[in-house]
Length: 349
Ligand code: SAM
Ligand code: DTB
Ligand code: SF4
Image (cartoon, rainbow, N blue to C red):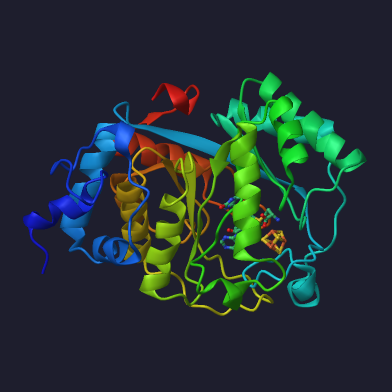
């Protein structure tokens, strides 16, 4: 049983105990969490975990806003990668029935972005089922989409697979706010899930994004058969990034029939709460996103996730290929929680 003397474990500052307070100085965020330390946090009694996470959350996010981010699949299906969770992988297409589509037109995408903006979203995320970015007409088209979304006054995020430095720099030039590229799981469990690209390749892409000045959106998935230690390992790897990713999506697996993980049991709601709270503690300044897999969570579970430090949700009928929560329900939930919708860039918070 943990006691309050463990508070120093939750200190976002150095383990050598610079200050004993849970509320640290944002200049000294920690990047040296050990997997054991993170695991200890993940396993705290729930009320202690929530208290610590909420305390840090209030310290670092004084305005208490929740960001609504809308997602759009701009290029669906036929991806050459073999990510076992993904309905868009060509490897499982026969079983999932997800068909190859071509890249959407710029105008179609901007129409969707306008609808999302009118519904209250301040961030528009565009995903492509690509292994990597390839230079040429399609990439130029994506750059046009980024410029168009920025011109609407929204944050724009894309997730296009691996990229090189020149491509990241071109996205930065187009005004891209954030690039999403997830670590997905721990380095140890990774090869059970994906064999067509390495963990190091993911880290290399993230480094190119960081070098370009675009903010980093990087998180992962729980519920794929990983151990608790793997969950801690993923958070340790994310928190080791310097600086921390500005945005950390925590997804619960959406088991899609036909994928190798299609029959996995749903994530226990409290496990999602624990994961979000631990992410909040080890990366206290980041925007933690309650991402995929929320549809089957009760209102109360989602409220606990917000209490635990989640300050963004994916908002809109659809994620990329799967269904998402009802938008009216989401607005009612945020109102009931007494939280404010983010109106401007998160950097003001
Ligand atoms: N192809 C690009 C890539 O993998 O980087 C971008 C799109 S990919 C669909 C973006 C992320 O969505 C993945 O890294 C994964 O974390 C998440 N994701 C995909 N399928 C999921 C599922 N069934 N359940 C939960 N998260 C999922
Ligand atoms: C992220 O971490 N989750 C989002 C976003 N980044 C691109 C994607 C979730 C996809 C869920 C499965 C689907 O709808 O295809
Ligand atoms: Fe392709 Fe991305 Fe799906 Fe992996 S997660 S199969 S890279 S679309």
